Image 1 (cartoon, rainbow, N blue to C red):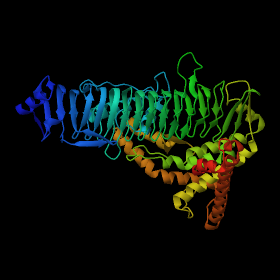
Image 2 (image 1 turned 180 degrees about the horizontal axis):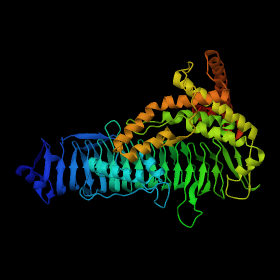
Image 3 (image 1 turned 135 degrees about the vertical axis):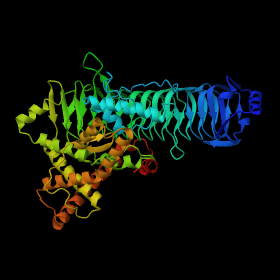
Image 4 (image 1 turned 135 degrees about the horizontal axis):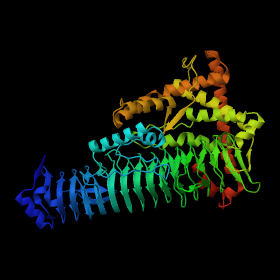
Length: 597
């Protein structure tokens, strides 16, 4: 229960250097210890939770519980606060056990006059803008940004967000156990935090108009404006973010990201990298000096880059709008002079300046980069430290959306020469030659990859035993959507949109329930797809035990192939004489490099 200050309380606060525009507008909880509030200035309605005179240890540093040297205006402070030297704390709701320390100002909107600031994702022209709220999922945000042809969908989602903001409040709240310290300016930012997944914000220059997800860590000179962060996102070391969505388990540092939508497990932590007006669909890594989306080819800033998951542009890579890349495209270092549309997943793409050609080696990862491929298959799930897990994420690179990209690439490579040459002219917007390297080997590699996907998926689904008749007589679902990390059949996305437009999903919470149902069904949908595709690849109408045993032998052969190529990749590193050049002895080399195996 909260109560007004007594005459004794007011006099004690005055003696402790506090002032108030109206002492009757201040309320305290129960037996709150007034002796822990010093040199504060109160304006408007202020509520203070229970304070106990005790010292808490924050990252090994003792800090006294209470409110000191702070100006408060229209604030609701939760129990056990540590609020020290905040120049202005206005229009904010602060959860329990929060630490606010050395902040110049932390200001939110007036509750009766909320601001609705749009995030211009994926394009600088604003025509993919979304309106965030605290708790928005990546799938919901992507649905809004991607399907712009559905006017009814857009207007409905906008109303749902305004409704959510009315129910849960504006972006002016900080969850429990958050730590915010040594920051210049925080304005209209919701900070989601819990005791088991606290969010930490330190040494930031400015955060404005955004949502910080659970378990995020932001610090060391970060500037962010108009943003939405998923869970366990790290922004650090001078990163500059604007008009962007950053997915769960991502790290961005020392670089600039603007007008972009980034799916989970994105790494971009090197100087001079630049990601503008781009959709990057996760499990990605942007190297130093990469300028992705820096060059516009129209007279206005309205271009886009679309990169499916596993996107890996090399050092100092420069791309032009509009370009599109299949999953797991590895771009060699260089300035790519024209727009690109790369339909080959797991490809190495090279700008051969001396020959003035664009070179593409499809299935490069499977043939020559197996160590990285195998590492990627495990590291993303291993790095997932989320507790809430509001966003559903398919971490396995062997997913149906990628399998369909491989199947389409095989069809393209199998075209007759004249039709194939015609298709190659659609890969780069230039008159120069496009060269496909190791075409036959790539086709064989793609077939191996598809077979491995099918068997791997069915083994995981049915624990290695013969699968049930999942799809006898049914056709293969070929259209899949990566919906912010959650892989969904396109027909289900279309149904979801119809349900939103007709009002059967009346708010964001019901949309979230529907997405959960799709996630619950995904394992079976994925296995059904793999089983149907397997029958088509093998020509087997119905798989019996003997056929399954034969397929398992082939699966183990493919697994042995993977293991041998992973090992050979590492052997190449270990036997490279230049890798030993910086060590004066074998013992030194062993000490430095062997633990990394």
